Image (cartoon, rainbow, N blue to C red; front, side):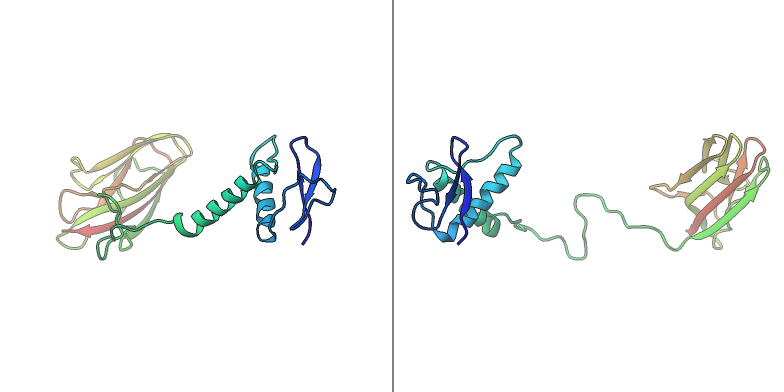
Length: 209
């Protein structure tokens, strides 16, 4: 077995062997069993690296403690450092807590609209299914001109509207946590700008009763 290099309390280099005295003949170097000397050396090196600016010394007084520490950590890793599941999640649910995100909506209709002057209302989404209401799931608006841009329900916007104040060469991405639904059936979403300027609008809409 290879010798294990250590330092004593005076920072003098010593060597440990599996049996007998150290290779330098110092009778005060403790003997170590071959089964644990390598583990102790590894533990000392790890602790030495973890303690910045200091060195963990193996001496006659603390070598047994280090061996005990190594055995304790090894036992903890193998038998104690684990998570006990005390209650399974409800069948068919991965929710933790009171809220759950049902994930992205994938059944919407994508519409892309551009205009150099949308100071008059223009459609930015399709008509919903017959007798249903249009739901705005997402909107991306870009403009080269500072303006207020509004998306609203066709004909009579009422409260079904969203507005943004955009800087020149500005953009906004609107993905509401609670999608916005128009108040009347068979109405489209429309856009209107406060001033003339190039705008590009992408929307994703769907229909609901």
